[in-house]
Length: 326
Ligand code: GTR
Image (cartoon, rainbow, N blue to C red):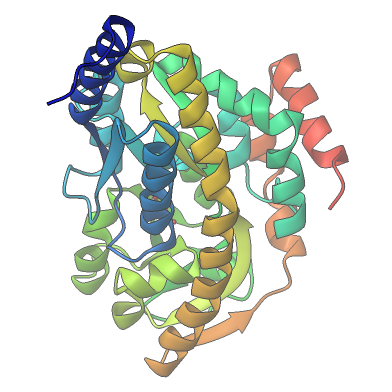
């Protein structure tokens, strides 16, 4: 037994208290519609590790993948109410709730992966993230979601005319309904989890997505024709409930933002590799991939822009995106 001077004893007690507070670890629940191992799921796990490091283990993240917490539209509401803490979600699933973010749902708004990154990594990206505050979530970072193309169970699409009379599932946003309509097809908004059986039973002819989703959701098994029109590049976004955010200290908020930003390069690397892997997988499964002349698809989108980009602020945002290099 040894005797500590009074001051040191006080310090020991104080640090013991800190340890006990720190051991009261908060596990934040995060939703993702994709299966374990998917680039977005792995990126949020990485975010959790970084957050834990930065907060001395006080905060960690558990990812509920494979839509265990529900379809995207439902989980957004639950995140807004604070029932779900974090959500990795496609901006498309927000519908037209956040006008500045809706702009990223415009067909062909992004010209390439470089253009997409240049826009989202700069001040425009920061402006779009900040716009989510209005809908009770705090948007922390964008992840890659590649380019989305149409696929279906009956034939290659080479021009918009080929889509006449065909039914395509779209994410639950009006803009995508109008997009398919402008191309001459019929859009059926439905949750992601219902697409496979929808195609299998013939309720829809096809859908549209990137290679990794087409592959991992099994859609390539039931819709063998993938037509590379690349009409959309919709950012994935990581959001935290405003309820959680408001309960964090300024330091922990900063740690959360940093952790999210630092998880981005990891996701991009995983994404690039997954696109290549998924393309090879769907080809091995017998998918027929055809290229298309994109110009008629681009030209057909004018009415969609005319309908959704009427507010001068959004017109300015679209112009700034288009003027960004890449
Ligand atoms: C995927 C996206 C998902 C989900 C899905 C869909 O590309 O990563 O978050 O939105 O598309 O089409 O519903």
